[in-house]
Length: 116
Picture 1 (cartoon, rainbow, N blue to C red):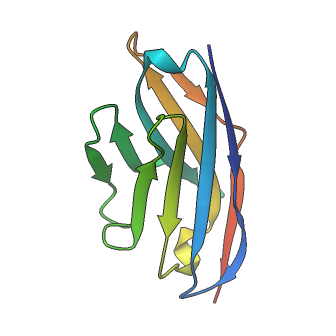
Picture 2: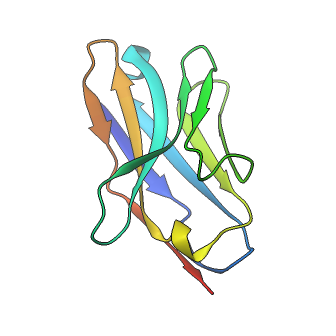
């Protein structure tokens, strides 16, 4: 089992920045990738960014060049630096961990609201 706890959401004006953090605990040795997803009202949950155990990153086209995913050396915390935020980035952001068996774990979500 993997537990994930997010923090760092909030209200920001368009053009501003926020940094989300997610701390993983439990069977962290089994994690093969960490990532961030988001879900806006009335929309499906979508991938924002992921980082593999080896350090490879992947971003949604809508956030490339504005958002940056990183992690600490112990690979227990993943961050999402969000710059040049837009109102369309408003959503609940969820931390995700995938283990070597393909099981996905989710955090409770943190609200990000970008005002115009």
